[in-house]
Length: 259
Image 1: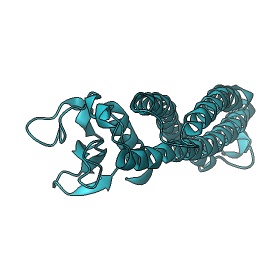
Image 2: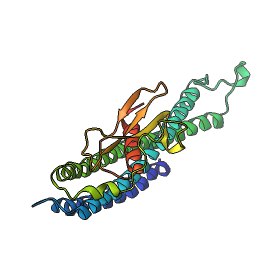
Image 3: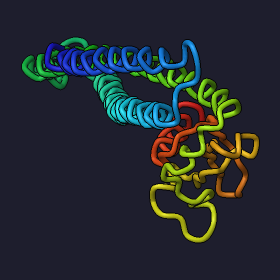
């Protein structure tokens, strides 16, 4: 059991450290960014810097979420092993072994004691292994759930910047430079043959320009379509100029909200 229970502990320590550092970084830099909007709208350059900062922080959060998502495969492997070990225990328990040793001189078939001992030892070891695997699976599932909740919370906190940027873009004439930020063509991946970055778990991803966003500071969002071309997921509308950030956000939603 000890050989297996250490797995969850090691992973939990690593994830816990990363999660703590990430949360501290996001909260600290987010507060600094929000302070620029306290008394008036910041300059165009400050807004550009704020958008870039949000992109960088969101990229860090999404990188952490991908690491968490990779643990799901490990947990699935553990659960598959648990099923196998459980089946092995059931098979051994159902082997028809006489409950008493019949002396050969009476015409019965004798079962050597060492064979019975081996069966018993095997069951004991398998049960210990099963206990360890189940403990690890439960611990890691709880870890994934908690970390996923943290990721969503951080993304929600970062999204508060968008409403402030939008308000300033509607009231300040000094926002035109925002459109100078690199913005790849909208809908990349939905027309023609999309590259691999726009295909995820059977869904086709696209980047769409929000028609309701300010013209001088357009917002964009990602969508996911199934094999029939039906839109099944729409990401948050954002001022993000980084296409990868928008794609990572929709992938995070697919991981946690779609089968």
